[in-house]
Image (cartoon, rainbow, N blue to C red; front, side, top):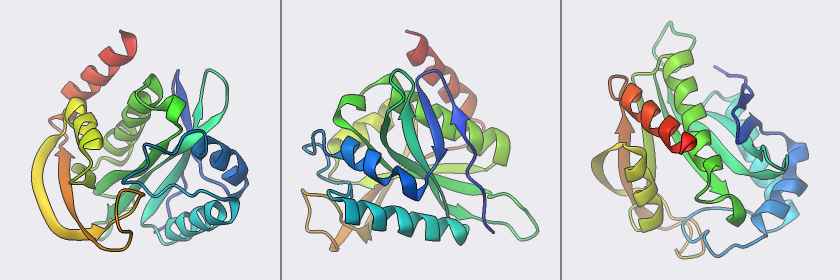
Length: 204
């Protein structure tokens, strides 16, 4: 079942439905500094960016992903992408019962900023409070120390390592080879504390 991506707006970032027209601005964001994309697939030329967006929109049409472009509030510039993915459906329900936050990348000057914190807050709020999911997963390459530290700071629970779970991507890997995936999750009864933690970080 296809889900239309909503526009999710905060003080620091707006998550807007990904569109083919975003390609040039997203490429500009990606090319400011590519040194942190070691474990992340971030297109490096316009044709690849267009193909990347086209593939995500095709997945969206099949109801498996809800993709967003991230627009920074301070200067109205596109600074990256993120998505709700791996959607799981229960028969007879018109909303997913489980989702994963993933496929996230940000321009170098938006990393480790309120943009990322608030984007996670917006996505989690939508998943838990609009869809009513019973689980949100966050996964990353087990070798990605920086990403794993960020997920730990979020307050998600580490569930373990899935071996040869997905394909490697990014410039520090051999793309297409099996990778081990570090899996974290957040459950509904954990969400209020995590929401409060994120809101506090944004207010500090």
